[in-house]
Length: 163
Image (cartoon, rainbow, N blue to C red):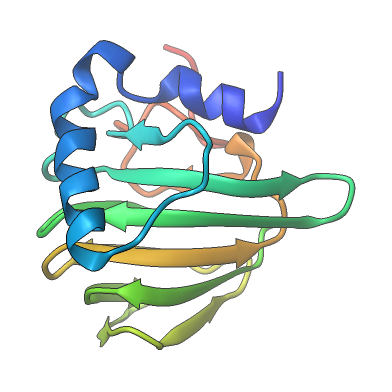
């Protein structure tokens, strides 16, 4: 099973995605943007609080053998991608639209369109939409097991132990 399939398995059930994706597509239309023709990954990180903790990912590429990944990350206003780190993955975030409150290590700061942040492996990070926001992530390949979440209630990633 490839990593996107693993992600889709832990995403919000397809039958619950309709209103979420409708709101997302409305925002894309307002920005006059389009996403790649791939299945979106609509995540609530297993917490069932999508409006608070979640995001939508569009994976452009996840080339394990070639060593790179590219994906769009979207958060609604007030929605947070929860604090986590990666042992292996180096990431670079580029803000395409909107503003996020980015937390990197013990520092929180605003990022706006055009801002770039390189996130080294082992460094905790999270971001929250200050209004709807779209980020581009360019990174080493994404593997689900290389996500280590600070919140032990999140039932995925490398620090998750089946209960």
